[in-house]
Image (cartoon, rainbow, N blue to C red):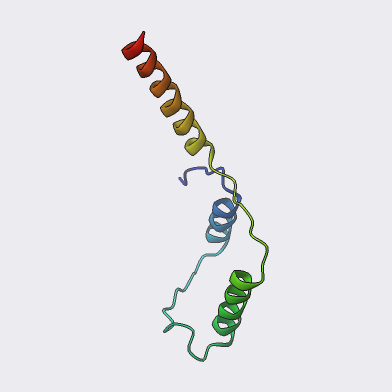
Length: 82
């Protein structure tokens, strides 16, 4: 039983894991001589230097915690200072 996630990338990974019976993970030493890794490294470097920044949405749990913390802080301030 896999917990549900609100993050699309997590759901996509879960779907892939469930749909494939055999998954092999391999350790590759850094980005040395592996075409796919070299290309990924190149894209990452380009994204840092030329790419437009983008923001990932915060998870709902993070936002709820921030709201709860802010509400508690306001309540505490009202309690302390009348």
